Image (cartoon, rainbow, N blue to C red; front, side, top):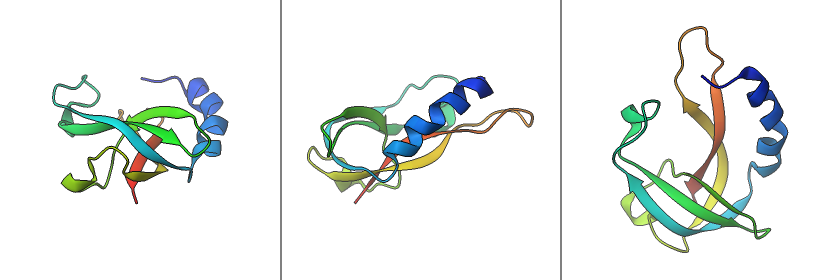
Amino acid sequence: MISPVKIWRRQKEIRNKLGEKGRILAWTIIYVAGSDFKKYAPYPVAMVKLANGEKIVGQLVDYEKEDLAIGKKVVVTLRKVREGSSEDVISYGLKFKPL
């Protein structure tokens, strides 16, 4: 479980990146995922260079097979990161959606 305090502290960083556009620099498919992500496997993860030059890594969502390409344009979006128990804080984070 992620601490609610850590989630609160990260919200400003996340908010500043939402809607930014970038291009895929590299990507891979995760077939063997950690315990929190097993139900999502296999899933693509991409390194993206944003328009401001910053490079970040995250999951690619709402994609078609042809979207898995170097140079493909993406936008930063907010999505649920993991499932928790009924008493956990729902954790959201940055992911990429193809344009």
